[in-house]
Image 1: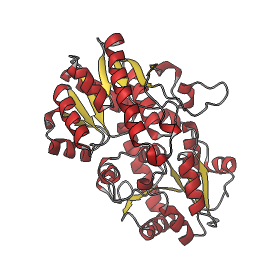
Image 2 (image 1 turned 120 degrees about the vertical axis):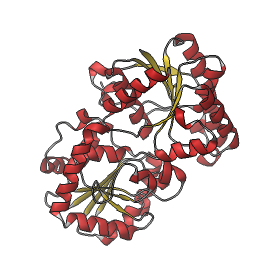
Image 3 (image 1 turned 45 degrees about the vertical axis):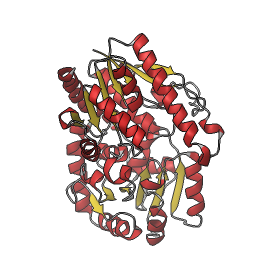
Image 4 (image 1 turned 135 degrees about the vertical axis):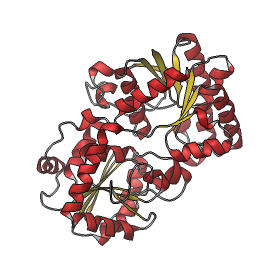
Length: 389
């Protein structure tokens, strides 16, 4: 099977979207498809370390690398202030969608198309392409894009929802439930197969060998709730907190907010291949998502949960519908009330003070890891798409 994965993404970038795309594409490749990843040709990208290609940067093995193509777009988003970026961003999205669809028709008309973009899928089905599938990570709020989504959904062979919350809102929008399949994000066991020992990881990161360590790995958008850790750290001065991840502007904002909190270290964005180092150094990880907006409470499928699952790292997470789809309270993790530091303080104290509970959660997460790999996800999706196509 030839498959082209269409996504309006910068590759490489500091966003989790690019990690998800690279692992999705390489897993489809390992599952037997011949994969082309069609991304956006953006003006601004992060610089790769000297001598490292984009696949090595994301930890994609040499035997599972898709072809990488780009489609042009009108891209001047980064040249204007954040408050004025709405219209440039929409223009970038729409020009990529049209150009990507044109490129698919010219080069990949015989391939199965797996699009993460509503507009690209809509263009393709309107122009007569039949074997198109759409993956959705949220349901848009604007009336125009919702109309485009309904039109695309009628024409595609199937819709992959990243969570049950996305599926519920798609059905409420009028999308045929028989077309929808829920598949959460996943983990890459190869990245975590030989993690460093805890003392070695702490030594490399400059962390005390005996002090309890709590880590947060991931983006720093407001709805992800990482700012809650400032107050959590203040309440637990004997615990070392480390935040690794985030785009540069968000990292600087959080550093200003946390000034004077001696036991909170903010390391900024890290290459994906360094995430296992932080997890290996930790006793506990946190997923402090806010209860609003809907992308946090209903739609998200956090990569950080699956990465913790890969190494059996105990989790304290917000008790939200999006999280409960993945984790069961006291069986897989401790789920606590969102939006406030105090429940996270209590949850972390409980885990750090209960060796038996940490061991139980670790064993359960490791037991669940094999069913939640990118490869298992890709095999399920390919089998479903073959039947639907």
